[in-house]
Amino acid sequence: MKKSIIKFIVFIFLLNPILGNACSMYKITRNGKTIVGNNEDWLSPNSKFWFETGEADNYRVMYMGQLDNFAQGAINDRGLVFDGFANPYLPINNTEGKLEIPIGQVIKNIMQTMTNVEEVKTYLETISLNSLESSQIVFVDTSGTYLIVEGDALIIGEEEEKAFSNFYYSQIENEEEVELEYFQRGMEFIRASKGDASLSYCGDVMKSMSNEGVFGTQYTTVYDLNTLTVRIYLFHDYSQFVEIDLKDELSKENHTTMIADMFPNNATSYQHYAKYNDEENPQQFLSELVATSQNATENELIRMGLSGIVSMVGYEWLSQKNNAKAAIKVFKFGIELMPNVADLHDSLGEAYFENQNYKLAKASYEKSLILNPNNKNASDFLLKIKQKLKTR
Image: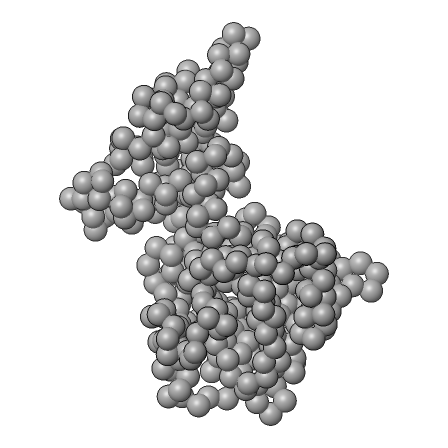
């Protein structure tokens, strides 16, 4: 993947691939029962569950995430759950003498071998967490005890109710300081409701924290950590849900399911997923997105972040779905609206290159270089194209 899109993705994920955009989590423990809910907010509806049976004495785990197979969250068969959040930058200094292990492997080690947050905390005290400088992770176990992993702090708490989102508890005096509208919506609902530890009530809390729009809530999961029942809502539609028995799912062989495929094809939430993934008309999603901004100038569209969104959608087709033809349609759509964005021409060139249409790739890279003479990626690809055309 070329450097410009890598930089964009790094910006979006705030230096860590664990998480997407505005996400929320809530736990309630009453009468010996713990329920946890979380919202995953992002652009793409291509979210999935994958179930790993484990080896030897390892615990079985359900992970959730996008097509890149990086876990945004997980729950194991002992009722230990985690979710992650993209947060503002917070330096991590306590790394001397600690183990350098990729965070993905750290998560896997935890979920496959641990049952409670005290174990997790003891383990994480031995690990360098410098890759989490712009994110945090929250673990909850069946007792309702939680662990917040943020900066150099590992914070354990036991309140009956607790909500988490894209901020650091160590950096605030009280929750009223949090300047996240969706979080405050949820807190207002919680204070007014005094609900019980049930899947339905937790679903209502997550609904109060959900977001619509481009980077809206793609799915919501609600877990009963004691019975291992999981309730799922799709695309901020709380009028219907599906439930799975996690014990049953984890008794099967390793398998993967797209979350949208668990819902009826005629559901509005599923239709959004189908539209986004229409390979014959992959730009339809973007076309409807910009329909309300028909009179916007190119600069206004760029300021709205449209060029980045086009890049994300295009590269999802190109890199994660291996569909260069669909990616070409997406990038061409973006160029029609924003013809002076060098990166879009560069991206179109890459899609043409992957589709082995080297002459059109050459033209796209040349156009990108005209707009940005310092585009080394385009220069490098033009040399590759020259070699390809020589051998034809």
